[in-house]
Amino acid sequence: MKKFIFGIDIGGTTCKIGLFDNTGLLLQEWETPTDSGNNGINVIDNLAETLHEYLNSKGISYDAIEGIGLGIPAQVAPDGRVVISSNVGWQDHYVGRELSVKMNGIPVKVIKDSNAAALGEMWKGKAKGYRNVSLITIGTGVGGANIVNGELVIGSKGAGGDFGHLTIYPQETEQCGCGRKGCLEQYASATAIVKQYKAELPSVEEAKGRLETTVILPSVEAIETTEIKTLTAKDIFEAYVAGEKVATKVINKFAKSLAQGMTAVACTTDPEIFLIGGGVSKAGQPLLDIVTKYYQELALGDTKHTKIELTELGNQSGIYGAAKLVLC
Image (spheres, rainbow, N blue to C red):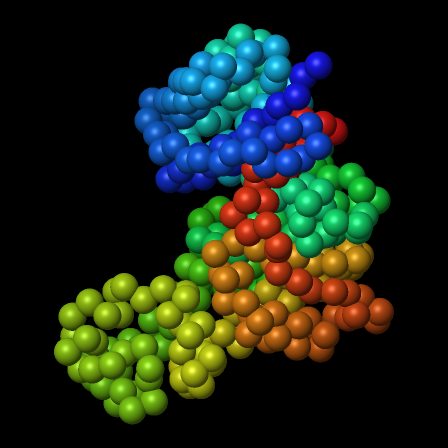
């Protein structure tokens, strides 16, 4: 009887790998660098090499592996075709089939990374027991996933749950990375938080005038050297919690924008619970409080009472969801 499953979450810099038994118990977890060279071919070659080495070192037979689940930062069509992955380099590529061949025919299932995270949270995390879940991941960009009546909404082309490209401000003049204008990702990502904060400090002279109330920028020297360049969303959230005025303005705009996107989702799929994940979710309760405030102000009717929580599995949600995919 086959007993083991690999759940793999491919990121821009590392691939997280988990070995699970078929009850969902995580037995071991490790990472390997993501080498996106050679149009992404290196990623599959390196993964296969890593998995072969692991199985051989542990004395696990290939027949004991029920399958491999692969979470990918890409739009994935229902048939497993990676439509496009700008981070890795794949386009119109059946990476699951390729990895299966390299792994002696072990079945491989492929899923968008945010869908994997949602599946993981519903299986073993904060969304356990729910059948209608919307997950939003906030990092460099904004991703998402919908589960309706216990089923992932992948869509006909794999674009289901792509919340980052909901149009929030159609009057926007700057382009999003997708080529359109006014996308949620332009206002509610970690990248956007930093960009908007820097826009509030257009010159060193103006920044000097704000030093007394700014906890991020401790000195004129810091402003004139590298402090502004190295700001992160985490820094700005900490300044917001401390009451710094510019950070407060930026985080309020971020939260209101995110809440607007969530209200659009609520009117479409009406989830029982929203989960917020990704790097920005590490801001914790202050993030939940301000997003909930704006969501309840903007949401329609009873949807304003939808629960909003942080993910429970954190960076492990993707490998759990990829493993669960094998059992679906």
